[in-house]
Length: 165
Image (tube, rainbow, N blue to C red; front, side, top):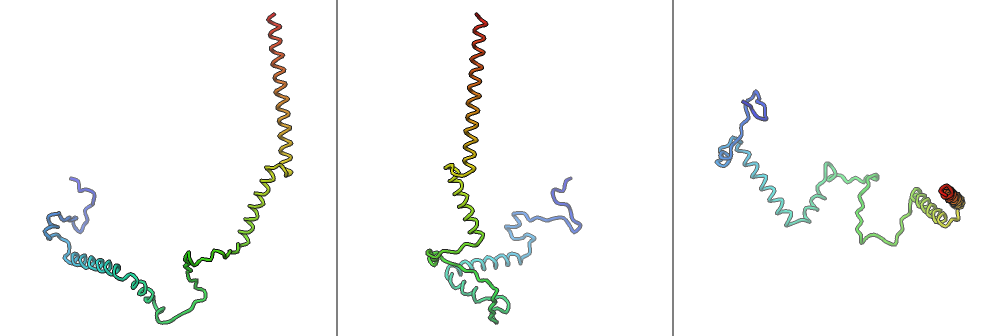
């Protein structure tokens, strides 16, 4: 007969309490468990009611409580970077921030590339002139090839017409 998912242990087999035992309170769980659970729920309820009544007082208490000797000795650490929380209304919109060297170079590079592309579109750069010359040459070659094909086709048709006569 199968034992199910769990293997038997040398200390004894597993015991599960049935729903009837749980309702009657005669389950094999320790009695202290119910007390601990009730105490935990009471603490939770107190915290929730405390948060609703005095939200601001909790912030002040957390500021006053410090770890270790911080409450006893005031130390100014010059290397400590305090987080700066700026609000939107405190920001100075007229003030311009200076860019770093890398950011400045990146912006200059982008502007130069945009300027070059504008000139390229207008055909004013050396590369654009070479490209246009190459394009005109290719168009000319294609036109000549098309004309030659048409002449050969016309000559073929003329030969066929003479052969039929």
